[in-house]
Amino acid sequence: MKRKRTAGGVILLILCCVLLQAGGIRTAAAGKTGLVTSGQKVYYYQNGQKAKNCWKTVKGYKYYFGKNGVAYAAPKAPGKSKNVVCKTIKGAKYCFDQKGHLMKNGLYADMAGNAYYVAKSGKVNVTRTKKIQKALTYLSDARKIRAYLGTPKKTSASSSCFRDGGTDLLLTYQYVMLSLYRDDKSGEELVLFLDPR
Image (cartoon, rainbow, N blue to C red; front, side, top):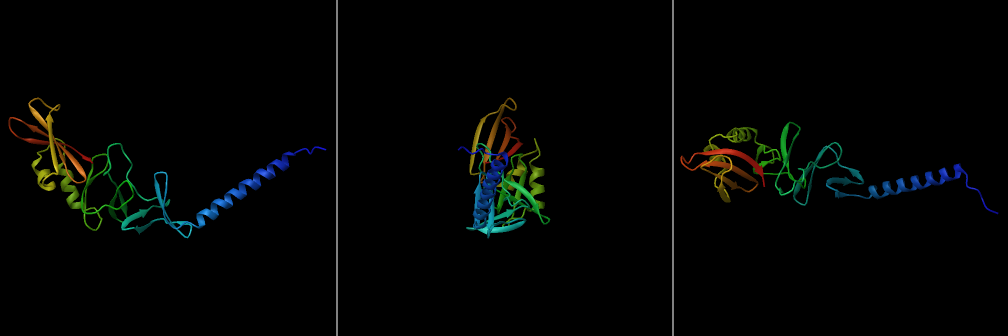
C-alpha cells in the first residue's frame, strides 16, 4: 500500500531541514576565533562573535572592524596594490590598505588621487596632508611637491601628449606615483596628478 504525502508533511520536512542547517551554521560560527577572510571581506571572531567597532592586532598588523564587523580596507583595483581608504575613527583619520592593514609613516593616495600623509602612529597628519594636497593642485608649479616628496625611486620620461614641446614625467615613490609635465624650452614643471602605485 502506497502512502500519500500530504502538503503538511512536506512542509514539516523542509522546516526540519532548514532548522538543522541553521543550527549547524551557528555551531560552526561559535567555534571561530581569530581573523577570517570571506570573499574580499575580513572579519575577526572572538568566541564565535564578530568583533565590531574596535581595533585588533593580528600577526603585527593592526585592523579596525566597523559596525558590521568588516575590517576597513581599500578597494582592489587592476594594476594598483598600494591604494588606501581613509576613515575617521573617534575624531582621527586613519588609512588602510587592500588587506585592511593600518598604514603608517608615509605618503599614500586613494583611488581618486587624494593624498594623505600618515605619521608613525598611524594617524593622518592633517596639517602636512593639507600642504601636500595644496602643492598637488593641477598645473601648479611642481617645485613644492618635489620638495615635500624628496627623491623618487624611479623617474621615467616620454614625449608629452599634454602640450607640444614638452615631456611627461612619471616619478615613482614608495606608495605613490606623481605625474608632471615639463616644458622643454623653459624647464618649468607642472603638476598633473598623483596616483597610488
